[in-house]
Length: 136
Figure 1 (cartoon, rainbow, N blue to C red):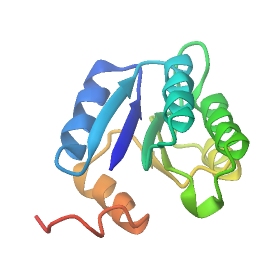
Figure 2: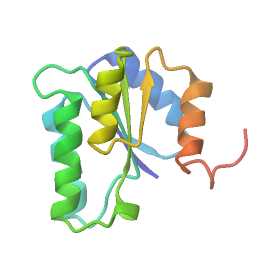
Figure 3: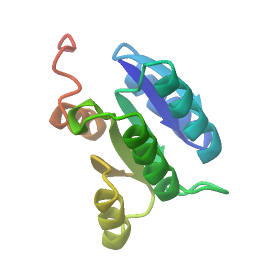
Figure 4: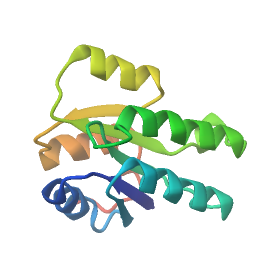
């Protein structure tokens, strides 16, 4: 599985990378511009990410803008809904309006920091991303 972690905080990037080791190949973007460039490049090469972990609060382009940009890129490349990547938003913001905005913009799930491994894995399982993984 191809995974993109979009996170401006070093510790959060490392934590997510550790959680996802053994599940797939992780790439990292530290801001929204890098994230969109990575997604565009993957799609242009007839490849795409199966999972994107996307921070909501980042300097410059925030996660909500990146989410909309990713979904626009997928539309431009003609991806059917079942071919789109799963996007899990993550943030310290536990506000219903932010969560609702993310889900309305077609995020697949939203998890509040601090991200506990068991909660994160439950989200991935719910999204069907652990079905082919060996049990721990």
